[in-house]
Amino acid sequence: MKTAVAIYLVLQTPKDADPAEFVKFLQENYEEFERKKERLAESFCEYKASCELPTNFINEVVPVVGSESTGIVNENSWNSVKMYRFQLEMMKNMDFSQRVGRTDVIFRKLLAIGDMEMSEFSGEHMNGKNATNTQMIYEFSNDLKQGFSSWAKLELQGGCVSTKDLSNYLLLITNYVLKTAEHGKDSNVYWFDVLTHVLEALASALGEVKSQEHRRLLAEFVHTLARGVLEQTAITLSDIHELSARDRLCVFSKTGSNLWLLLRFLKRFSSPILNDDISKDLCSQLNSISTTLQMDKIEGTEIMNMQNAGSLYLLFLLRNSVMKLRERR
Image (cartoon, rainbow, N blue to C red; front, side, top):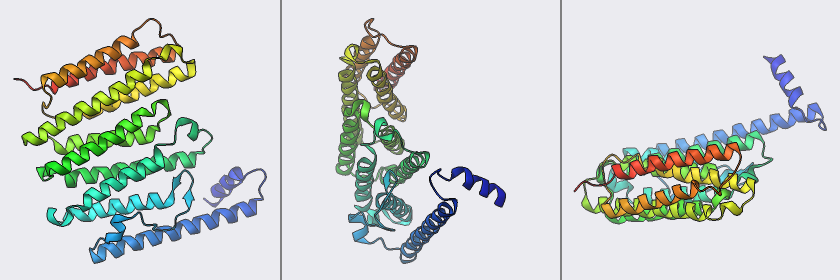
């Protein structure tokens, strides 16, 4: 084992660095990492033992083990996400009346942190980043996903959420998704995937809603969100024939991402919620995008043609999903 470690260190040592200094650097970083882990674990135990969630911790993004930047994700933000996840786990044992208002604040904080840390990192920003940073943003996005899943189970399942709170949640999610969709080819795929997960968690947690008011809100939410995303997709495709091959490839990728987000979201609903007017409007938009993608003037490489064919297939699946969600009169 020692030999294997030694070989690894020799291979990983930068050409312009002294091996002994490089090993010392690794040891110092490892020890600092272990100290931070211990402090974070102590914080967990402290809050668990007291069973109290400090008000200032909910209302502010509090640095847990320092506020320096670690690679591509700010360490303070990441530790805050971990602590919010921990708080949500603790709330599972609380009555609804005890956690009222707290889950709402945590949900907003998770969205704000995710948007701040991830939404601005486009593919161009990620170029040149090493594997460690790529893995870091992947793990950070997974922590966010787990936090949103816990929030959805706590706040939305069981029909306890009020109409006002549900309306606020849906409006907030719509704004974040449409803001990201507007970024076109420059949006970060990890953040887009996190938002897709938020939509899936929301649709799964609500399940077969019984309240007519909740059903109305959900129908309006689906219509507004889907229409907004499809409109952004149509705008992006409107001048595709004038773009360079590289930009055209990015537009096709973004089109597929937008359609995939909507498909994953709609397929999570287990009962019809859309009226005829909404269904017809969404199908009309889907048909319009399909027509644009099939126009002869869109020419490209084999990869672009494959992406184009994939988007057309997603449009077909989306039309089926919309029709399945249409209420039968």
